[in-house]
Length: 205
Image (cartoon, rainbow, N blue to C red; front, side, top):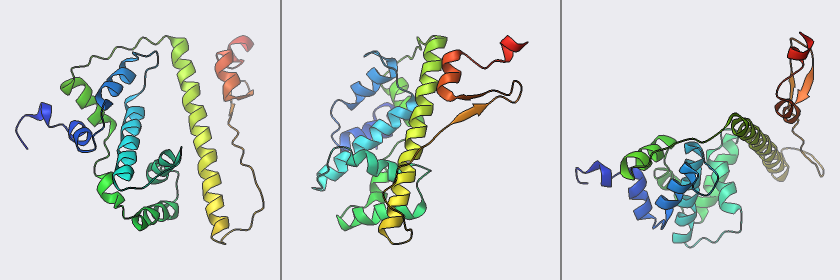
């Protein structure tokens, strides 16, 4: 590698190696909110890494259905996924002739995305979020986590059933998050709490 760090960032190297055409422009547009929606650096790292995984599978001649790459990435990286499920996922890829350990070396962190955008592409980030936008985005984050928790639970239980380690008929998973204010004693769903702008503490004082 040359001494020019600006052209030798890990993100750029991986973009070139996996031929991720247009990825740099996409990262910049999504971070600055050029298309109306601003993504966090962590979200962008996930977008980038899923693209790497998809490209690696395509290069290995492995076809995948819609959503399979996203689910495989989740099984490999989500802390909520059990070690057994993660190992099983890696073994499944290995049977396809894919060394996921090599691919994981090309996954990047949100810090690497930030360095690439600010130092390699010279992007300046300005958040135009209002307080309402921030509350809405926080609610969306909680919703994504709740959905992810439900999906992980369903995947784990299904895996236990399929491997004869758990007896369970057809099932549904429900994830309910409520917030109890110890001061006013009121309980709320997260959606209601955010929509109301808080609890009853202020009105009861």
